[in-house]
Amino acid sequence: MIIHQLRNATMVIEAAGQHILVDPMLGGKGSIPPFSFFRFRPKRNPLVELPRNSDEILHRVTFCLITHCHTFGRKALNHQDHLDQAGIDFLKKRRIPIICRTQDGDFIKKLGLTVSDALAYGEPQPFCGGEIIAIPARHGHGWIHHLMANGTGFVLRLPGEPSLYIFGDTVYTTQVRKAVEQYRPDILVVAAWGAQLDIGGPILMQLDEIVEVIQHAPKMVIANHLEALNHCPITRKQLYDRLKNEGLLEKAAIPLDGETIRIDEQ
Image (tube, rainbow, N blue to C red; front, top):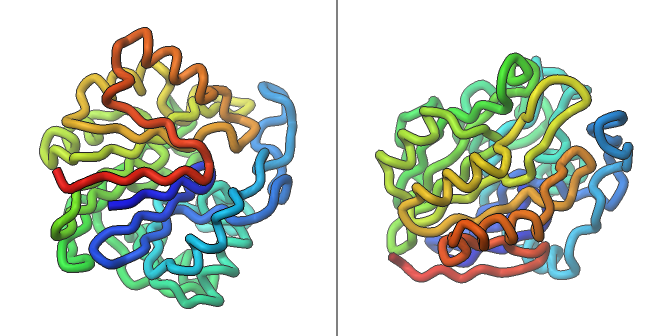
């Protein structure tokens, strides 16, 4: 398995003869409004451009996974850090088949995109000779998650490949913990940005939660969703330093944008 980290949650997974794009935010630097105006500096998003090798990697994409993309079914409330207009245009032009959760299927179809499967939580479905399973993702602590388009994580179990659990945008819930215990994935991909809006509590895992995930991970954790959005305070260096202090660096990878990670079958 080869994982190409592009930017934020956007990555491409090479596995089982496929190139699987996750959560495409493909627009240029500054193409999206700020997500915070008061708690953090109101910089336009993304804060950085896509890496130079993105076009070559994206050219080979055969499937797309979308963990979440809207609030209350309104495009104006689309979560553009997971599906922006440039991502929509790319998927539409290439007619890339999309896998999402059941609750997002109709919304994505209305954008003119191709939904090949809309998954119910916890029900394994055939995918690329193996299976894919949707796991509930809770997008925030406290009441704020009701406004945040709770989405899904994906467990991928493909022939001849390490098993993989992409958490999606979630805090560390009992459901997430149980999924890790049940499926024992070789690789966990964790959104490690510690995001907050101008109101409410954290909408993703904070450092203590990330540390707990890595401590209990069966094998390896990849931390992404870093240093690309204005409402995400955790930096790669902060995460690295914390994991070093906890003695957890051997279990974790913190890829740079444009970095490739190669993982042998476990």
